[in-house]
Length: 154
Image 1 (cartoon, rainbow, N blue to C red):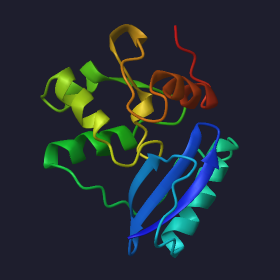
Image 2: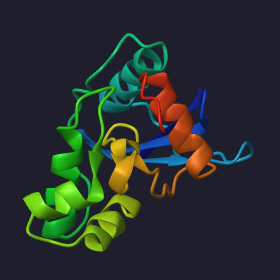
Image 3: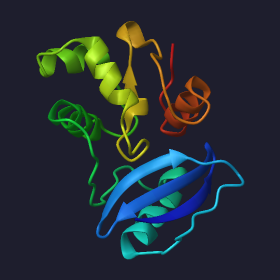
């Protein structure tokens, strides 16, 4: 596994890859350092695309992903990846589309190993309520990501 770190408007991020695919993105502490900080081409491209995203110059990530999860989780993550930049979906709407329940969708969102790139921050509760967010500082981080994309919460 290779890892690199990026300072972003929503905190310090650790980006992880195995060989030729991205496997994780998580919030890292300031003092965290990797034993192996090998910069493979996937990590370099992920860093470039994240920088462009935070500069509002990139609206869709194009990276090889290899998220580990159940088949159901992967179906939720695929659906989240199709939510356009600056738009949102709801847990309930996704649940209906996948013949599931909103809580199961929320659990899969919370287990998303590649947040931001797989945009779980774009999933809201019914009536446009924020719902939850497990990354960074929780809901304040979700609000920052949505504001960056021009989403106004009611």
